[in-house]
Structure formats: C-alpha cells, structure tokens
Image 1 (cartoon, one colour):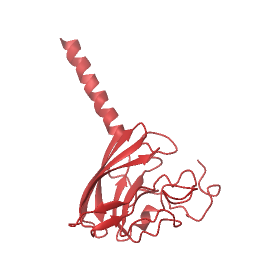
Image 2: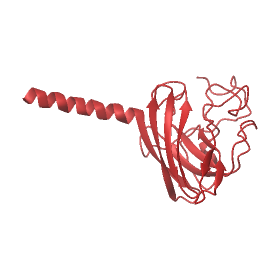
Image 3: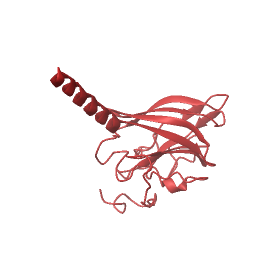
Image 4: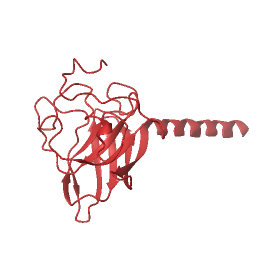
Length: 192
C-alpha cells in the first residue's frame, strides 16, 4: 500500500512539472498599469495556443503580436522590442516573404471592448528551441490600437501598443536584453 501511494505521489509531481513547462498564464496590462485580462498559453504539436480574455479596447479590430522581450514598461511598451522573428522574415501574414513568428491574426473587440478568443502561434513552442517563446528571458504579447494590415514593414501599421503581457519562464524575472533593429537583415541580427 505504501509503495502504491509513493508511486501515485511521484506521478502527481511529474504531471505538475510537465504541466508547468507546457502551460503559462500571463496577466495583461494597459499603459497605466491596470490589469485588463489574461492570456493562457498552451503547448500543442503544431504550435502554442493562446486563450485571450481582455477588456478595455475600443470596439473593432486590433493587431496582436508576440514581441522579442518580456518587458512591459508603460505607457508605450516599446521596451518589449520588435516582433519575435527568429528566422529573419518580413512582417505580415499576407507577405510572400513573411511572416514573423510573432505575427498573429487580428482580434476583434465586441461593442463593450471585450475580447474572448483563441489563437495559434504556428511553429512556436514553450519548450527549448529556436522558436521558443521562453527562449533567453522570454517574450511578450502586445495588442495594438488598430488592425494589422498584414503587409506593411516592419510591423503592420497597426498603431500604438495598448496592452502588454510578459511571457517568462518564472514570474518576477526581469529582462536584461536590448531590442533588435527591425531594419537589420537576419544575418546582422543576433546569431542563433
């Protein structure tokens, strides 16, 4: 009996550890530091699923992107750097030489400014690797004031950054990285 309880306890601990590696819940904040929602990221075979619930947006379409650094310093969130782009591609889901790994489909806020949507970051992972959202110190999830046009360089002409959430390995981690220059070619960007 004792052996059975010990085995069940170990399985529970390993199950919790695996879950923490493949799921992250992040808090989303506006430019003045108010929490306006959450995003739950879950590892899947074809990418990372994001279940997003936020409020406080104007009704209509908004751009949403994964950015290269886990720094959400308001009010403009420029501290998050550029879109996550480990392959040095052009911006835009519609661009023939794109997209950035961090480019996502636009989201739509309802008449009360709320969003409740599921998105997929294709080819991304929460595990180790070049396309990990937790690579180095992590990344961030940012929602913009307007919709992304899917083509304009370097970021889709979607306006100001309104809402940000930090995607980090551990809560409380502070990023020390600096943003890249989106006008550099991938040869000039940090070596992988």
